[in-house]
Length: 544
Image (cartoon, rainbow, N blue to C red):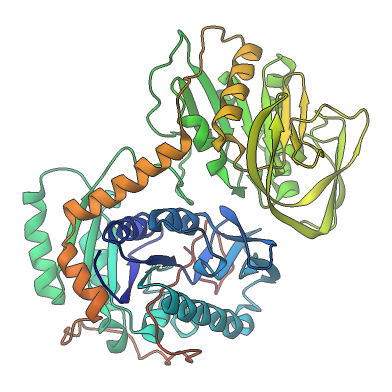
């Protein structure tokens, strides 16, 4: 057990530079030292969210990355870990989730008006966490050098200034230009912000470290700041990805099949895909190849096609038709091969969708593959759920949706029956659907579902492994992150940053930016951080 009190902000040169995984790795490292540690992201922008049961017993949403970071800390997720979550519904608007509850829609026009309320909530949440935990490791949003947004920032240097947080900047060398982006990140900050930037971490390095060292030494001379370590690229870091799943990417490294055949799964990457991490559990199974794709040929060739969740069901259904993928899906079903819809993807399978809430389009035609009708209600269902499937197989999940089955004629058999006896979803021949996210993390349900899919797809040589544990796979990922931090970062220097705060005497790097207005303090300075994460955003709203 080691005693420590303090905080740290992990910022990034760009979106998807590695802030989330580095934050989780530092959290796991501190947790191993016996430190009571918590994660924090003041503002996230992502459609990948997790359901947390609040102190009032109601379900609320936080960014999925913060739920993963909580697991790295060995604590239960808390709504305060991500007080502001922006869920993009279009290129110009996002739903605002404040301390777990949807409260408004943010656009370029009203973000500045909402910002004081959101910043106050974030600063107060941070102060509360600091009082309860020894260390709070904070994750930034996108780049801290969004100079056009600095005056309204409470997620990056605005948070660091408020709480006097030492800040490290992580850059993804796999993208190229890492030295320029690290130098520029510091050089475009004003003097007060620069005083908090302590140094750098290089992420996803492959090759000979000796070839990199001259650049690290030059960066140190130019900025007066050290590089705290170089994290190697690692093929096994793919679980709980937030917004970085790429077109055509095969998830993970599927182990060889237990039987004689592979099972090929194509997940359609909808424009506003949400909680695509649902299918990661399928990819932990030997012999299951899971691809996130928009390619019609890959969808047509798959044994199982998955329509995942979406923040914009009607708009993404139109995209499905416009791209011709709806025709490919129909052909797949007509051939008698299995199809699964999850949440918004399940809603697309209906005869009709009546949506006056999300899109405001009213009644539109669905794909007509299931004999159900979907209606969107003003109240949002946000809850954790449990039940059984395939007779008596236990299954757990969570729900985040406005739409519900308002009519079913004839009613299909439910895929799941909840613990209170309610039917959930549909299982009609080779068609499956559910509003539940996260169901495939239940090992028994996942195995039974894949066995049924293999039978329907004619993959009679496919066999599920009897011992695959998704929870164990997630723990291995978190331990790997902790190992990488311990082995490749200067943890003694990180410890000093956490305990002592920003180093004194850090040099100013010209040209700098005009001084930003000091953020209004909503509470005493506390170790914290913030962030935004997104695949799209309204103009004037920080991206991830």
